[in-house]
Amino acid sequence: MKVTLLSLFACLVTATLFPAMAADTAPIQAQDVDGQWRTLPPKGRLTIVMYTNADLEAESKALNKTLDPYRGAQDFLFIQIVDLRGEIPGIARRMAEKQIRKELDIEATREKPFYAKNGSKTDPRANLSTIVDYGGSYLSRFNWDDRVEMVRFAIYNSKGVEIRRIDNTADSKAVASYFRTLFGSNTAAQ
Image (tube, rainbow, N blue to C red; front, side, top):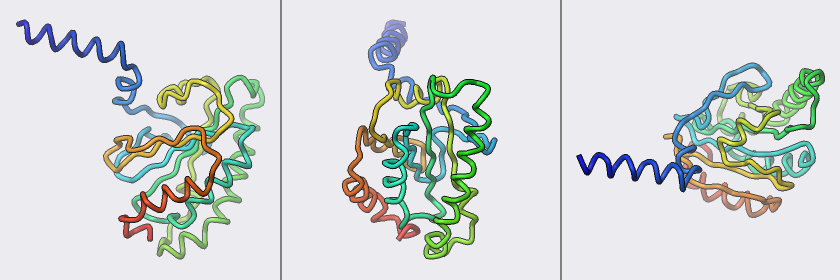
């Protein structure tokens, strides 16, 4: 009985003192701008989740391009979460999401050659997922509670386990170097 109470106490202390660890264990469902439900973090593919906001559009696009060599790899998924907390009134949210969908259509056209180079016949648009967070509920899942002026990444292995976090970076060369290391042993992405 003491072991059971001790175990329960240890779990309670862990969840209290290390909320990030406790929050990291349960996947959540999030709807992207295309109406598709995504599990975060997903399982089955190496997944890179990127934090961005309206002020980081240029930086996000530059960092997004560092992933071009791996586009179309069957075991790779990229999900972008846009922090729009307090920025878009409820009445204008559909218009904002429509604009994001237009930008994703353009991005899909830009990515087609990379898909072809990696032997993928998949339409790139099907793999472009952007989740808009108006209230912070999705961002809190990643412990991204504060609004920052740098792009962030959370990287998950195919089992849905976080393997790396890159916070507050605008250095696309450093990010590209890390992605080369990450995908180095991934033959499908070479």
